[in-house]
Length: 97
Image (cartoon, rainbow, N blue to C red; front, top):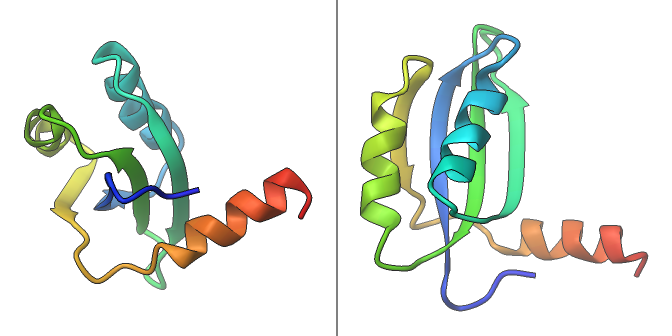
């Protein structure tokens, strides 16, 4: 369930096997927890959008800089107009509510 201290990082990435593993591996290596992940292929099928729900702490800018360096990451931004309710709904689904 999103907290007031959470933010959503929006990524546009190349769509092929291993991309999500590379991105989540970056978070693992930095000991930065992902609270939620949403990912879907765009209409062109060559790219995907990813939405990462993370805690907004003092390392967020460093994580964004590291994401921008990954070969398969085409765009990175903090999503200021994202609907956190999507993550709430998924959380409730996982909890069986």
